[in-house]
Image 1 (cartoon, rainbow, N blue to C red):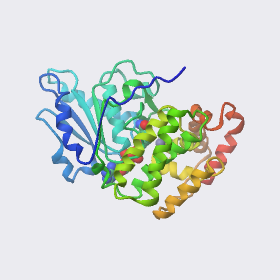
Image 2: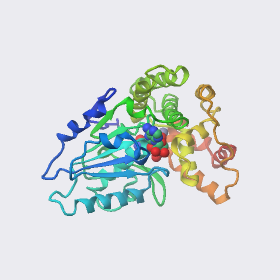
Image 3: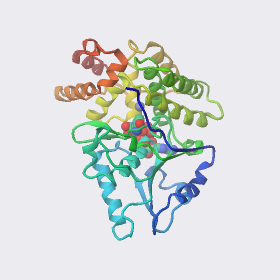
Length: 359
Ligand code: NAD
Ligand code: ZN
């Protein structure tokens, strides 16, 4: 079966295009009060962004904290908060959910939009195509580039049992606003870690067994853009990084990520390591699997004086190690993409353990 995937319906790109958000949303304001809900990364709480939000009187603005990556419990709590806001109104749902932030905030916006129309807890839908009802209209304004969350059909959540996305066609954003000025303030090393998420998406897609011309076209372009951004720092680096993230996301939409992401999920589940930095920590130890990519990654890292944390797994218990291996092994398509159909004979628990012990 060929993948028949849903893409973001509308995209606006350009420096300053954030100013158009009000007009874009106006078309989507339905019902008497036409409530829009803005979920905004609280890193912007004390900055000028607050005064640029196209807020109407009945709208709801929530500062979200992403010091920890999104959990299903955060989604359930936010969904409840929005339902309470809507309780006294004529419309049962808001007209839209707008996520403004990095991958974590965008994922929260996607998940909340889904959970407003689907019963139960977000944890019930971690997996593939478990969502049955369309989401509330949802849009994103990325303020960090690299994850590809702006184009993907998943929202990655840590639940009580596992770290796994809600993957569905309904997850995909209806609108994205790609304004390179929005990522201009992102500080290093965060900008680097999230940018490397994109670079690693490309390596894993281009080196994977699931590769096809669709993924190659986007993956090669995204990789070139990452090289330009992180090896030569051109004046329009933010514009290029934003498009790298978009293309990197499109590349994995029709292929898959690989070993680095599988191991990084384990680190994240057990130690709470964030996605971007976790990927960098893992990737640095994958020379045997992605020799060219790791060499170039180290070159980029050296150019920007990035120092990766070391000895993360030094003090962990046997139980934590086993859990980390379990979480990584659940991600079967990633291993198959990286190592082929016989991956289970190549990647044993022992081998995964020894890789983790180096980190
Ligand atoms: P993030 O959203 O977790 O943010 C990282 C830090 O940067 C936070 O402290 C945040 O407050 C801050 N930040 C964001 N924008 C900023 C700005 N412009 N200036 C200053 N600080 C800013 O980081 P991320 O790397 O974009 O996203 C990682 C998350 O994305 C993880 O939760 C991961 O699971 C998820 N993810 C999702 C997908 C997907 O397809 N849905 C893909 C990859 C990763
Ligand atoms: Zn990633």
